Length: 337
Image (cartoon, rainbow, N blue to C red; front, side, top):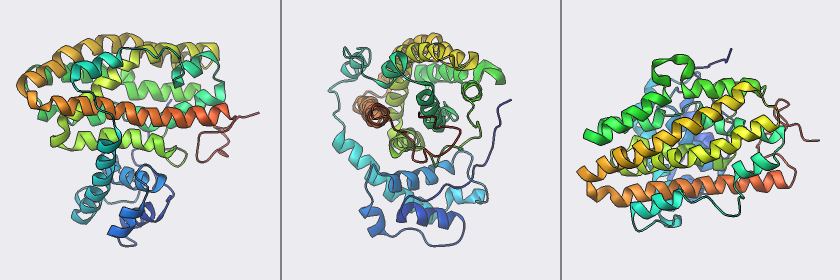
């Protein structure tokens, strides 16, 4: 049975900013100063981990950290400074489509060179690479659908109804054994990975932290509700073909029935979700608030931007025959011969 931990341990720091945030959460030190925040690389380990620590207080928190830290005003000011740097970099670095229709159309075009992560794993990925991929993605999939649920109170009409319908499926349609986060935990069991929530946080690369931080950033801000809908559209529209390839990779490597089922389930479910998201969620939102079109396009393109960075990191490491994890000595992950 998958093991579900409600409060993971605080991770190891990756620099002065994340170290200060972690110590503050323990009640043992001050928060980072402005110069430290300004000096951290935006997409680097230190800033992304510090932001992840702040965001995780809105999910399950951390062992030994008081629940009321979630709304600590000093910590929120630090989070805002980290967010400002992250969001400003995303807006500067992301090439945004001129229209939502153009952004959506590009999502539907499969790359001709077939060089993405799912293509690689389908054709030549080894079992140790699939296990690493699952360990990295567990930071997202074990909270799958949760950040998107924050947008529900900020929508109405067709958009709210469509979003709620898709989220209902993500949460298993009322069946706890079919909740997608639980299905991913079952996949992890097949791959002999630890299913505890947050277990692989220390191992995850900065690029993976950024993909999770992006959806938390969009989800926690009403002003970014359009971007959150764009993010959701990007995830749902690209999921079905990618999941088909990953299901084939799991079968080819004999990863196990639960590992295959997780991706097979997403092939079918997300093909339906794509239509609901396009016509009801996005269509409904823009019918009510057409001024959010640029934000929806930004959400789509920013998602592709950070996912592209993650893909480049994984493929560069794997093609060089090395682990993509920060802690490749973890015995249950690295099986590089």
